[in-house]
Image: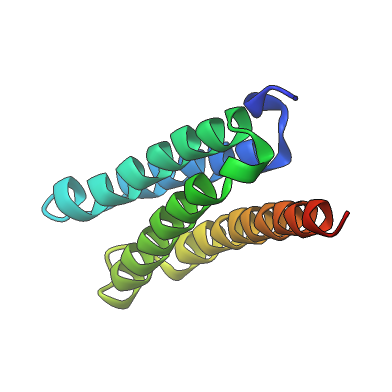
Amino acid sequence: MALHTETDIYRAIFDLAGEAVDVVLQMRRDVKPVLGRTILDNCLAMELDIRAANMAPAESREPHLLKLLEKLATVETVVRMCRDKRFIKTPAYARLITHTQSVGRQANGWRKHHAGDGSQRQLI
């Protein structure tokens, strides 16, 4: 088992969190405590979820990955609302969404990979 910090998905989450910090710093002061905090809290919570998933046995990773995907959906929703209300600029939105898509693809790929492992064990 590799360290969670050495996985591609961890690096993608870390990049997302770093980009989110930069974007939140540029938000208006009145929306930063609520919307900015929501984005940052969920990004940091995803790091904990990927750590828990990496430490869990392969058959127990699904709940952690589902929590991660739920937090990812929250980030995407809040970021889109911020862009629609013009609290963040479109290029910043695009950068964040690029990172969220990367994390989502990797998390779903990991889920499918482990779902495939479980079905193969049952057949053997």
